[in-house]
Length: 337
View (cartoon, helix red, strand yellow):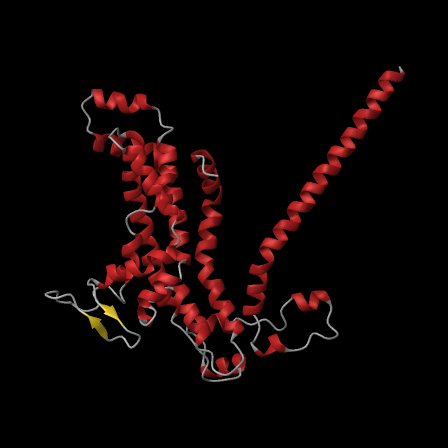
C-alpha cells in the first residue's frame, strides 16, 4: 500500500515538473516572439507619428504612453506613395524641401530584378544540380568541390569583375570618370548595361554555389530506379530531367526560388554601384539609401524613412508568411543545416 502511495506521489511530482517545464518553455518562446516582433512594431510606430514629435521629451509619460504612438497619422505613408500635399508634408516634417523618392517605380524595379534572378537561378541551378548528382563523368566530384569553394568567396571580391562584365569593355577609369587606358584596336560601345535593370540582373541570373548545392542535396535522395526505368524506355537525360526529376523536385525548386527572391530583394551594394546614379532604375533598397542621404538640414526624416522601410519590407514579409512552413520543411528535407 505504501509503495503504491509513493508511486502516486512520484507521478504527481513528475507531472508538476513537466507542467512547469512546459510553462517555462512557452514563456521563453513568448519572450523570443516579442523580441523578434518589437522592431517591426517600432518601425510602424515611428512611421505613424510626425517627425517633430519623435524628438519631444518623454518626461511624465508612462511605459504604455511611450510605446503607443501619439496622435497617429498616415501622412508619412502617403508621402512615400506620393499622395501627400505640400501642406501635409510641411506639417509632418516642418519643412517644404523634404526628401522623397518614387516608391511605386522603385517597387516595380525590385519586383523585376528579384523575379528575374529567382527564375533564372532556379532553372539553371536545377540543370547544374542534376548534372552533379545524376550524371557520371570524369572529375565530377572534383569539379563540384571546386565550384563549391565559390561559397567561401566574399561577394565584395567579385564586385569589380562584375562591373567590367556589365560595362562590356576593358578600360580603366580615374576618379573623375575619364578613361586612362584603351586596349589597341578595341572600340567601346559606351556604358553597355550600366544603369539598366539587365545590368543588375546579369551577374546573378544563372546560378550560385548555394543554389546548386541546395538542389543537389535533394536530387541525390531521389530513387534511381525511376531514372533507370526511363533510360530503358529510351528517354534522354533531358527528358528524364524534365518529366521525372522536375515534378518530384517542384517543392524544393519553389523553396529555392523564394529564398533567391528574398536575397535579391534585399541586395543593396551591387544595385547601388550599377544604378545608383539613375533614379528611375533604382530598386527599393537603393532608393531608401539615397533617401537618407538627401535629408536637408541636421534632423533626419526618421518618420518618412521608417514608412518607406516598412512598405519595402512588406512584400517579403507577406511571402514568408504564406510560404514559411514550406521553406522550413524543404530545407530540413534537403539536409541543409
